[in-house]
Length: 403
Image (tube, rainbow, N blue to C red; front, side):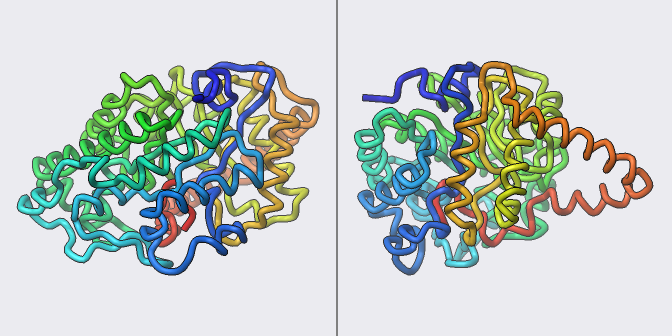
């Protein structure tokens, strides 16, 4: 049986409240932060574990059992479809996706044949079927890499700090760029449709590195392909989440691509994100993953501030602003889940503790704003490089998977 329509995650994705509060799950919740994951994952490329459907299902379930999160996310990787059609991609431990022969010319388009999920990625389809049968009322989130982010790996050949080759192709040969993204969009649509048809109740499109682009370039060179992906699964009726890192200036465009839910990283307060989107989309996010290494009282305060920042809007899925860091204490994640479930409201009101956090955060923000006026220009310049998400490029290749 599929999860009920009023499952907290599904209700929040539709912008609906309920008496079950704010749902919570974590990107990269199945991963190296879990001792049980490290015991079962094995050595070598993550692709080996992904291609074992029963193991992938087991790893997907681990954080659901440990934390009681409101969703599972499939243990997989955004490069699985391109690897499956023979492009020659591997995921190197500690590095991320590496491509033996990067994309360089129109001839390389022939290396991106159409994906046939039942034949090319049967392990993904089977893992989803196993999970759909075992999860009961807990929704399973399937996912794919957005065309831009996958293209960046194919063109650069590995994680990049500046995306120089990617931008050179995009700006220097826009026709070839459009053809490349069109092929990648087709792969993503085929993969997502197969996951949904096998039992996924929602999907997330990871555009991890779209924040490297200014809005005008995103709108012209990236948005059409992302829209093709999200439109390509619209008829299946599941919530579509669209997420990127450093995408504060792109949030409205990401919603315009067809997202039901827009993922927000930790750099943009949820209230500001709603203003920037200006549409009906629900929001997902947005606690800074690095905060989880702070004392637990700080983690609790910041968690309450995120809840307060949403202002009681029903369309909120609590998450981190990016994936769980490998060294994160599982006990901290468990406490966040407990706190969100206890104090998160999805009925337009704020719990007293959350309201107090909101008042404190508002006062602190005002003080910081006044103190920082003299250096705002310099800080903005320095922050833009960070917002591109480059510092984490070596470890952020995966979508739902844990490495």
